[in-house]
Length: 292
Image (cartoon, rainbow, N blue to C red; front, side, top):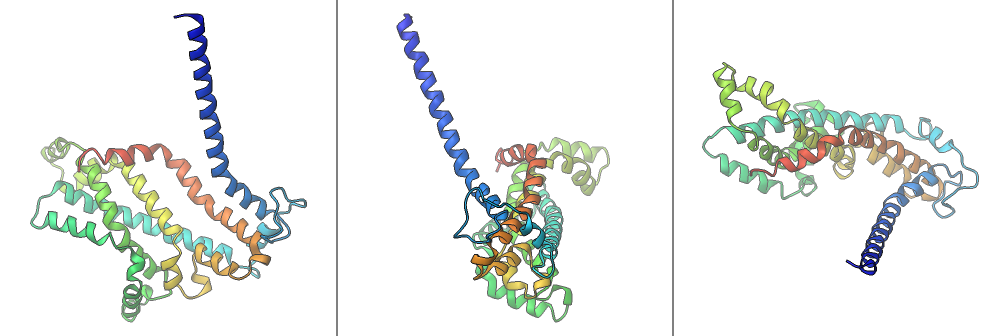
């Protein structure tokens, strides 16, 4: 190969590298600009969306101090409500999803395939389409079980659990299917009961998909607005999404900075959990596709 051809190939590679770097920078700016803009708004003393600049002249943390002032808003209460509801829903949801997926994957019983298809079909229709029915169900249920009534966290958690089990059961079942049945048989030969096989043999092996399902449940319930807005009616019971939305309603000119500060702090739990568990995410999302 001549030096001229080698030089041409080198220039092409350099050009391709420059294009990739340029595209990466554009994607990075596109992804980070909203975050930078929100950070700028949170330290902008003007508290106005109209007068906001990317680099505020007189940056201050007054908006962050106002977040935790109960005379301004119940941010701490809303944050704790969201964390509690999301955590309880995640823990219970993972347990029920894992047991259901294990049963569908390992046991053979009449109506198994029909039940799986029914669960998948039901998940086609999101929860908010059943909002009126769910509202009336909680209203009637609350007459007999007060802590599952409207405007209770227990009732909201019950609705969330009903919405998350279907698609996550399918996702986790695929992961269980990828685990050899020889492990079940070996545990049975050693004298393990079906529950011991599930809890002591299978659960450690399906940890990646447990993390994926748990993260999906946590993020979905933590950030939900529609169902929480309909089912919760008092400010002290609001979740963070509902509380911040109602706090800034028709007050963008006066509360934009506080809202931005609240949105940033509210995003911290999700970011921390994602960073802590990200090494499980790729394996958990892909391994379940080995077998249907």
